[in-house]
Image 1 (spheres, rainbow, N blue to C red):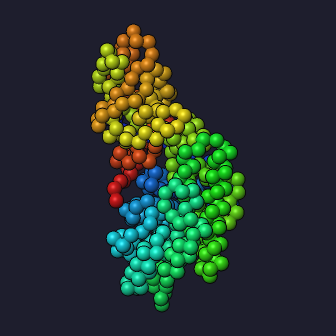
Image 2: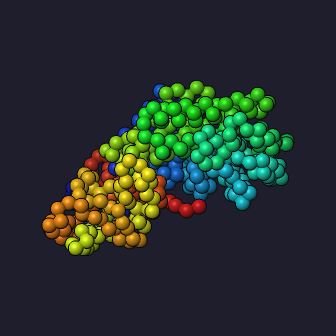
Image 3: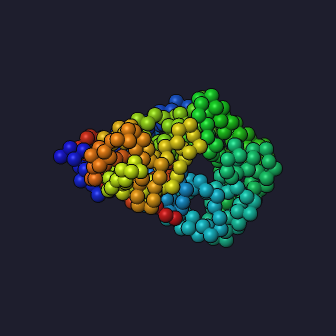
Length: 384
């Protein structure tokens, strides 16, 4: 049975993953990191899937990054032993981190405040455990972290202490130039990549000058990772959405629509000829509420509408959605009979604005295999 026929038999909505595209994306990023001479630690929050992470590691990744301790636990169970939890740790999660360390995971944690640093150090001392820690640095004003020149950087480092081999040990610094997502020219992206690099390297040097160890200098976002021209002083790069890409990344300009490996297959369930609507079973519960392209040059609504073979469908836009209903608008000739052009039971593939958000709506990928044979199922997980 052809892949086309297999897709037609799927109960929709369902998340599709093009393995060929994903493999190309993995190879492209790893080659770039190898050329720049840095270790690569991909962010697994995008896929939340051991089968995907195994391919990233096979390509040359050294450890992974996660956004939840559940991710750390699940990937450790799947055989990954070097994991960075890249969200500032809080006391309610100390016990979970301790369990993971005692289960044999090489886990690195993140702090950005004196309070968390001192509490983690004391928790480690009290429980006879040494935690490895990075300090988050803010290099672009995007989200959290400490500015490279701030005195607070040194104070947080002082709050990390080890007594008789237990406590919290400073390994280095980490930054994420998330504001790169709002850029769209090679020059601006390269400048942001250099700003990210220079700021994080400067923070590391200030810590060393103050007498603190700082072996790790970790930077990264997909746009800056693919736009950096040099990474002097950086030891590792992190990036996540590159593995699938999405419409936001194509509008940023670091990939083409032909690089996007993820889509949602949905089915036409009705029409409103008078309104020019084609109704599908793929609402915002399958696509997510993410409208990330709304602020970019081209607003794709809830996603780019393609036919079952993945080619964009002229005249159909996805600007409205309910929980379980996608409302596609026909912008072509009003005299076209929509029931005949797009009959009930016909299918669309919707390319997502944000791969992470759309992926999070689904329990598994239906994989369009690289060998062109039978569809495969790769489970993914969600939650905290």
